[in-house]
Image (cartoon, rainbow, N blue to C red; front, top):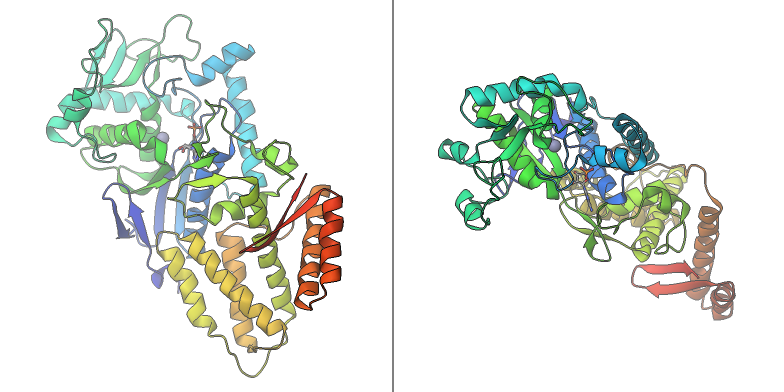
Length: 493
Ligand code: AMP
Ligand code: ZN
């Protein structure tokens, strides 16, 4: 029997603001769409966090035996610099600045995106469609929206008529906004504005002569509005109504609100059953973003080449760091947090090795099946990875008691414990045992961790001469040990 028949998932639906029991449209199948990157620059770690949250969710569904069609697009046209309907296309701007073809920009950063995701051990999505590959589908949706009276043309551009839509539907329901408030809070329209109302958004924009990224349409040469591609690609590959739509919290408005409006206007019903939003990665308490420069690239973490870092961190350690927070909570990146995650990650991997060597006994002190279900319960409760990790550390404690012959375990329980741990660590959280291309700095960390352990053993044996010697000599080499509640961490000056 497939695991999903026994494990019932509750997910926080941003649309209802409640945790709801997941009921897929087709039993045993899940359709999930996640907004992908706009490929005009290198992905930063914040982007990776959102995609990693959905990679973990994808992995958990697969682990439970669901057949998942996971669509994550590449935005290679239509996303304008101000995220609304004005300004240059982000990709065209980069192409102009670097004197490249827009498609060279797209190619370069799509490759970077794939490389980084591969380093983080992401599973590839089932389909990775591009906006430029679906211009025809987007034009068809615009025609439909016009036919149904929810759009209008001005000078070769087509806009979505939000006020008209709001007469029969509810614009703003996802982000909890009311159209009247939005209108009250907007200043007067500039005279030259082509929109009837500032809340209207572009479905198609006329291309000015200098605009390179352009396609023919019934309304003249132009390019699609940013929100339309996701409606076109999700409908094409997942149907008019599908199970899950995800993205970063910052996409709720206007992007996802507009997606709902487009789909409801065109198909007459709601496109998505569960809306999931992943929270932001911050640095120094501020959102990590390309535009503000407050960001760090994954490559800088893997080499340690950034002023906030004392050393390099492996992709699995960064992944472990991300998984220690719930996907709907804000997470702040810091060197100390990464050091603590590294320690935790090594402890988990060490325990796994220890467990493999434990000699089984006739009896068990550890009720493995209860613990196993608690791990599932954590994941079933809106993918609560921090609780899952806490449960795994409960198991680590038990493994250490087994090692010291304080507790015992039967052969069957040992196998269940091992397979459950491996399933969650490798299949669901996507961590890797091998630290590929272990850099010298990783080797150094390993050595310092070993010395920290020896110092702890010495202190436990009240051999303070040895423990002080370890601390002082490391300090003389520029390696400071810091004792805290969670154990000892180190930094290199
Ligand atoms: P973009 O390439 O700007 O369209 O962003 C790609 C994805 O990254 C979107 O789902 C964003 O919501 C997400 N994202 C952007 N900044 C952050 C951040 N600081 N933390 C988490 N996710 C982010
Ligand atoms: Zn999207």
